[in-house]
Image: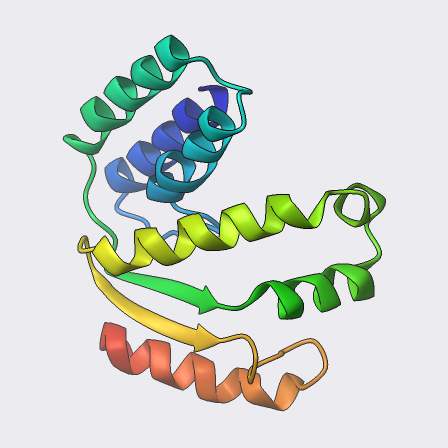
Length: 149
């Protein structure tokens, strides 16, 4: 719940200061993906999960929804290829079943996400690390969606 509270405070501070903010992960994912995964794998008890859920729902009532969600759609093979390329030991030692579970939760979540428009990036075709020339097109698309040229 520390991360949920930290993200909530960051969002509220940005709202109060009327700042635009970009997160690598949304508060919705904290609940919909990661807490559900912790509960499903037994790392969070039923009681802890329900408390987390209640806190999340209460916080969401007081948050402004994002203007846009950038969703990077992938598959487990692409994820594993990028993990190997990054070479982070912790990620390399993580069982494939963990990545599969997260992928399943993400796919279920994005189908029902309705807080804002979604800009979907297909990670099987877009890779800004190996093809940085793809970045300007993504930026232009996002600017167009946000009407901030």
